[in-house]
Image (cartoon, rainbow, N blue to C red; front, side, top):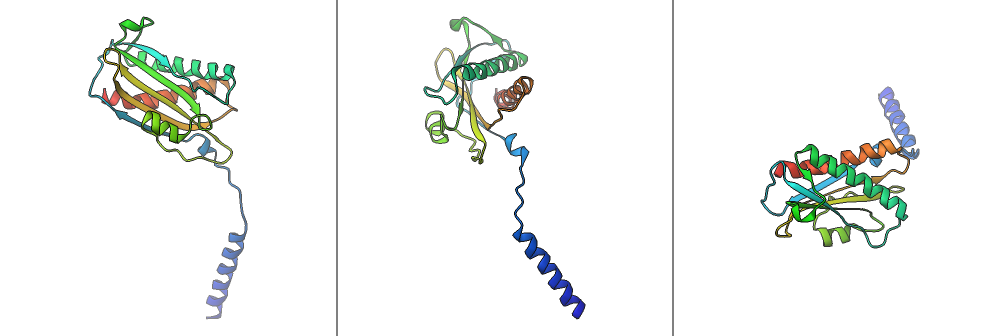
Length: 188
């Protein structure tokens, strides 16, 4: 009985001491989190070979410098064009020839909050804020060129990582675009 009491006391003491120690564990996977949501607005489909045209949208006021915004938008433009082309669609620079338009925008939460996204875009994956990380959103939609009606929309939210190399940024952008657009292709 005495051994059992001693053992219980030892376990209790160990657990109590362990509970008093606070260990700050950085979770690097948090910075790589990506939350995605999409919705099909119209049952229209576009066959391979359909023509598309890009239509970037910009936040009116941004905390980023103009050069940073241009660089980010160029990364996303390249990734969207490449992804659509890999999936059989053809980019046209002549707007009147397009079968559909691809509108997109990128913004940090401090410039375009989740509330604004919900009000203007109607969907949000709801990635929770994290201390010391800047949450950003990539919004994309497909609009029918003839009617102007929105066919599909998707959004990805993740955390900006300013320490990535140019090659890593390109890869991350391509991954984000491909992951969101996969949902469009599955319903097309």
